[in-house]
Length: 481
Image (cartoon, rainbow, N blue to C red; front, side, top):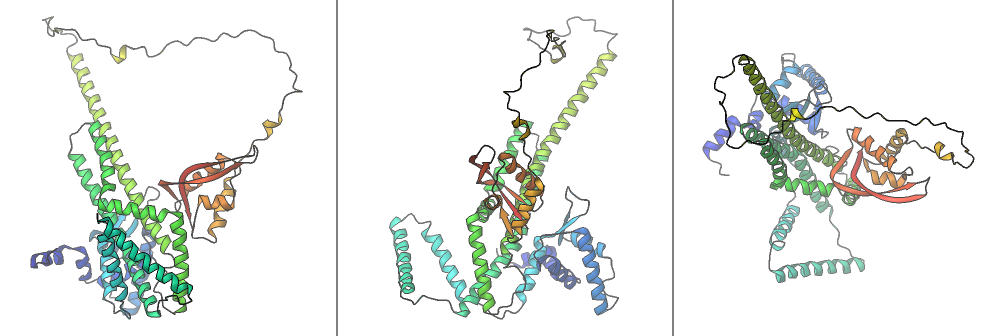
């Protein structure tokens, strides 16, 4: 995009990010939003919580800089920031307390201020190598020249063989402390920007949803066409470049193998960074996987809400159509009553060349008298129960949800998150399908639990009473601490 004079002038006057940075209250707004959203990577904050925190922050600033500073109330400040586009305020279906989250404009403002801070260490080697790797991936993995691709792979193979030989000879290539710091800082900055970009991803999906709703409101299509459009819209949301990229990200992150590998990498890198005495500004790297899952899950849930809203919109249109039909019927009844005693003089006021076959719904019988059952008058004799197996009546089992919840809590004591498969490996399912369904019921009521719509996993189940073992495929369930 060309940075023309007119474009810069427009951004200065209209873009909320620049308006925030040049506002008189920028130090208050940006510092507060950073402290209570970005510092601990909070995606959302409840209205009651953020109001109290802002009140405490204002009191702290007044004690330090004087009572004349920031005289307005915390609630008014939050309302103003929401109106200016720095915060998004909405309500959930579970509470009357509003929920606040950062907008992309606020995210960009905080990121821009962070970029202005002087960096003690600026890495260049890792970035150059990253550029080379990405360019190679673009060029070679899109080339239709098979010989060229094979040549590049053989080159990589030779480099790997050389490294293997060095390791076997006892002289493995090692990163220097400088290279470790450089790569770690690059990973940290990339992860921080990725989490910030989730707000923009969600807002882009929100804009797409808004434009779709506007088209549907202006549409005069019939119900069948509207329903077809909604299904096409659902596909189009995921078929955009952004939608495909997000789905690939989510499927990658939901892979248990990748999660385990990420855990190991984060733990090992944390120990290595600790040995170099590098100071970490926050817990971003320690809890990166959890933050990524939370941010991705919020985008996922938002998209599902959009589709559900579109379906509700279709129901509303159907309700309005039915209401209008009933109004027309009532109008016909009123007119019929008015002309009841003054029938038309011309008996042939309506004629048909061919009489159509008409079968009115109201002509069908609404109720038929049921047939009475005839019971024979029989005398019952006492039977012999000596050969009857009655023990099965007392072998009923009960799945206790509290025991299953305790299993989940025990697993979460040593893990940030666990899947249902991991739980079943430690605490085998012994009461058949009923126990697995109870786990799913617990997950559906847990706000932190995630039930995937796309990923499935095999769960081993045993029935201790019948001594049977089998496996089932169920949606992947993840419980988060």
